[in-house]
Structures are given as structure tokens and as C-alpha cells.
Image 1: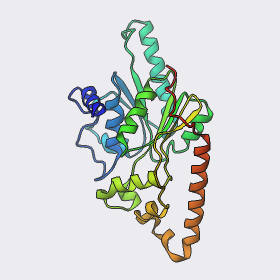
Image 2: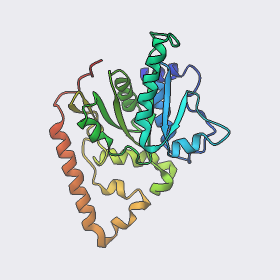
Image 3: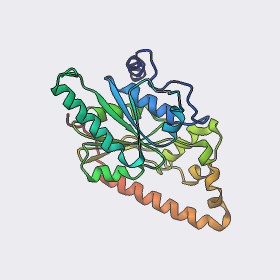
Image 4: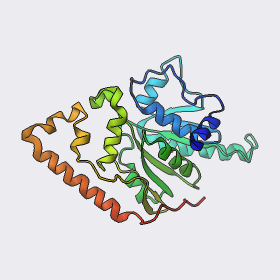
Amino acid sequence: MSRLKTLVRNQSGVQPLRGGHSLCQGCGIPMVVRTVLSTIDRPTVVVNATGCLEVATTRYPTTAWNVPWLHVAFENAAAVASGVESAQRALRRRHALPGDEDVAVVVFAGDGGTYDLTAIAIAHHAPYVAQAVAVHWHDLSRKVELAVGVDGPAFINVLTDCPLGWGHEPRISARVLNAAVDTCFWPLYEVVDGTYGLSYRPEQPEPIESWLGLQARFAHLLADENRQLVAEIQRQVDADWDELLARCAPEPSPSPRN
């Protein structure tokens, strides 16, 4: 409850992403955006790569954004974000911005634009890297809080669903996303200064069919002639989960260095 109060307080009565956008019914993107931005307790600039979020929230001549916002291409979101941060430093040196005002720069990518960066970000020694899911909003908010507190870049890979593309009713969005976590297909973890730690562990992992079976896009896999493919997917999920467990520290993850 205290974290929910914090999110509401940080909004100052103004949602960072208001209604009136054209994102599909049941889309989890607005929940992710609002959770992320409402967690941050200081001025924020959003850099938004091309994707559903960008297209659906900025239909000319309107916008659903209540924060400074830039649209960029798939491939240069990180470069633009670093440019915004460099511009802030330059403006402070010229006394055009308050010297003690800390402005956060948040990049929203999507449509697969950064799908492989969890492992890449870890390999490049980013001080904070994490994986989250839209429906575990409390966990996502905590991870955002840690991410904005580090000295340097941080990356959080957040899974949310697309009812239209995945082929499921919008009303079961939470069930679908929870299944991704509970089957260990999408584990929730964080890497703090190179140290791995789980942030959620299913008491009894569910079979991968529990996730596949909720989505029409995977209906062909559940046909009798393709059962061996499901078995192969299960083996890969199990292997990835075992590898993650082996990497994780036995105790909770440490707080990142500031």
C-alpha cells in the first residue's frame, strides 16, 4: 500500500500518460508506462522508439503524454537518450538549468526493438539490469526505483501482452502474463553490479502448456503431431531456468551502488 501511495504522490494529480490514446483494449503498455514514470520522483524526459506505444499515443495533432517526449527510430533510442543527458550537463554549465536538478531520462522501446538486450546489457556491465512483467507492478516499481538510483545506464526488460497479436481475450491478460512467469518462461530477476538474484520463484513451476494454451498463436503446437515440439520447448525452458538458478545468489540481491 505504501508503494501505491508513492506512485500516486509522484503523479502530483497528473497522469504521465493520459487517456485518449488508441492502444488496443487489454493492452498492458499503459500500465507499464504509468508504473515506471509514477515511480520516479523527479522530472523525467521520455525517449520513445517507434512502436505501438509511439504510434497510438501521438496521432497528429494530439498527444497523450504529459511529460517531455521525443520520438526516435528503433536503432538510436539509446544514443538519443545519452544525447539528452549530455545536453543537460551542457545547459547546467551555462546555468540554463538548475545545477542541483536531477532529470531522469527514460527510454521506452518495444516491438522487439530491445528484446535481446537483457543479456547484452549484462555483458556490457551495466550496473543494474532486470526482468519484470506488467502484472507484478509492485516488483516493477521497485526495480525502476533501483534503476534510476544507479550511476550509469540501467535496463529493465518488461513483458506485457498483445491480446490482438497473441490471440487471447483481453479479459484474461493478467492470467496470460502470470502464466509466463509461473511456467518459468519469463523469470523475474535482477543483476546488480554483476550479481544475479531472483525476485520471484514459483512454488511449483507449471508446464509450458499452461502458457502456450492460452494463446491462439500457439494453437498449432498443441496438435498431436507437434507434441514433440512442446517437449523441446519445455526442455529449453527448464535448461534456461536451471542456468538462471545456478547464477543467482542464495540471498536477496544487494542494492546497486549509487
